[in-house]
Image (tube, rainbow, N blue to C red; front, side, top):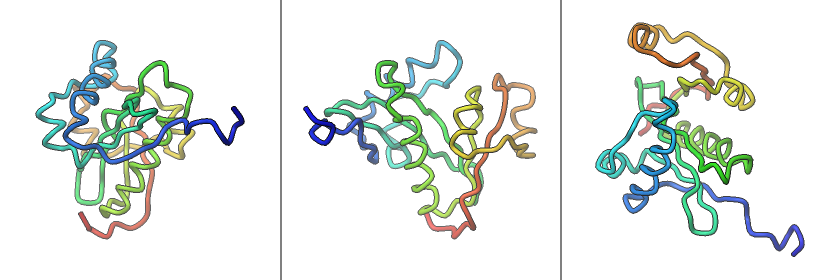
Length: 158
């Protein structure tokens, strides 16, 4: 099979309520390590329009959640990729698609609270202090840093 005949590594699309079980399973893979907070199927179904999934050969291999934090500020949450698909670029593809969705929805800045600072720095994020977030999470945060990326002026479309 030539490179041009090879199936695409993955495709990113908006999640549907039918993806809830696969998304929950992906997130659950990362809960024991403390990297992600658990999400219920009900939560995912209720907020499906805020999730994106990476799919390969009909199987969901990754997910990410765009969560509004303030009118012009959104958070990258629940970013997960199955172990066997790591290294394909699905995580970066999901974040790129999330940024495009955030722009369409009018957010000026997206941020991630994560122990994966190097990953986000490679995607153009910078370590940043967000005063509201610093106050809210200062006593409970188990994460090393906040990384943010400016997308441009917010247009306040949702």
